[in-house]
Image (cartoon, rainbow, N blue to C red):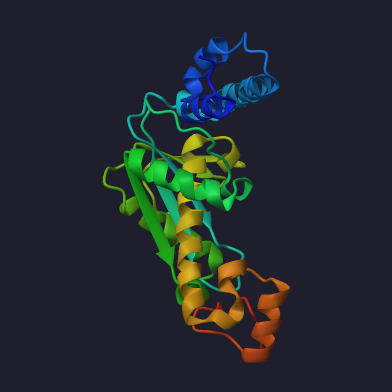
Length: 254
């Protein structure tokens, strides 16, 4: 008895992409337009999947170069530029035998995909460390020093000590571990990309909680960055307790 197209569709949807060729071959002789469309759709999905594997392998260049080190740690931060909220650093040690696809600079990944990847990273990473520096501390020591401090805290919060740090472009002072600075590292290293996503999701969730306390600034939408809505509220209402006073002089009379 011929299966309904809806049943075949469900079979495709429920299948692991790695095994999709088996289902494509199973229905390759079915001449119904609906089945042909399904086969063409999943052939494209398989092609995209294979291209992603190739892209991810290219992003392991530095992990392969330093593969003699046991624990390779990616470091990145988010939140240097906002007018409000903390700067957050992530430190991630990925397992060498696990392939996590779709890792990239967090700015290049949708919010939904970042959340998905965050869960995958937290479940599979050997260790994850987070460093958070408050707006008050940023005002005290400046954003660059605050970024370094967040990174040092993230490293200290790892459950294992890394042998080498892959950093997104910077050299972190007061750290004795070997460091490699990589320009645009969050696009070139899976470890740095993972750190970027962990830091971004962590900070975004913090700003969403701050929005509940200070809803008038639109933090849930702007995450503390200087959107027109945010600047307008800042000029009208003045700063909240989480604004960076050293950043807002152009908008608020001190």
